[in-house]
Image (tube, rainbow, N blue to C red):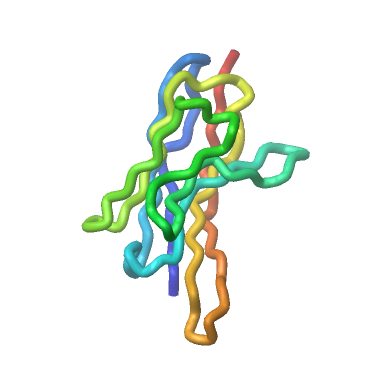
Length: 120
């Protein structure tokens, strides 16, 4: 069973930084892809950053070089380093993993979310 646990959210001032962590199990290397999404009140969940199956990284347009997704495949931890945070980055951030099951179906798993609040 896939489990994802996010930590690292909190309150930060505009222009500050935070580093989110996602501890994944059983084995992060077995995931089809893994990434971060966010959702604020009244808005749809949107992609922040992901590591697609083809490799490399993909970021939401709003990131504009401020965030970096990092993967420690040995410790099964994914990070999101967020710099120059702005008020509009205030949201709940979710870790996501997509898995290909034995029936060749894609299944998405989500963590419980971690709140990031940026004070203006």
